[in-house]
Length: 164
Image (cartoon, rainbow, N blue to C red):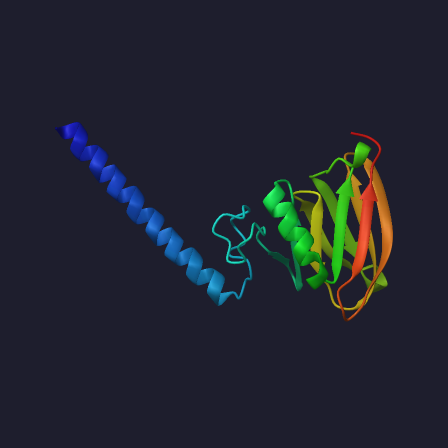
């Protein structure tokens, strides 16, 4: 009997903790005006965007999202790409999708704008209009592309590595 009571108490405590965390997380996401939910949950589960879109992250004034490992997430990122100023794709041999690509975007006057690791083959970035250099590193191989971001979405940078 004592075992049942402690299991019930533990379950009640876990449920209460989860409920408080969910409420606090939801309130934070709304107050921060974060489209796509909180920035602490890196999965698309419970995402306000729905449709498999991963969580939107922020680094300073720059918003970005990356992923595309699963088919739902991949499709969602492809659909959303035309709403973002810069869309990037990372592929390897045989057009295999790559993840864990380190991205560094440099703006005017060699100012670093973004340092982030892509969680999948797609990365979408909201940048102000301007000329940028995108540096991408997969394992020990660095590549860079010059991009011009306009007022409308549409800039692309596709990176391909022949090594695994």
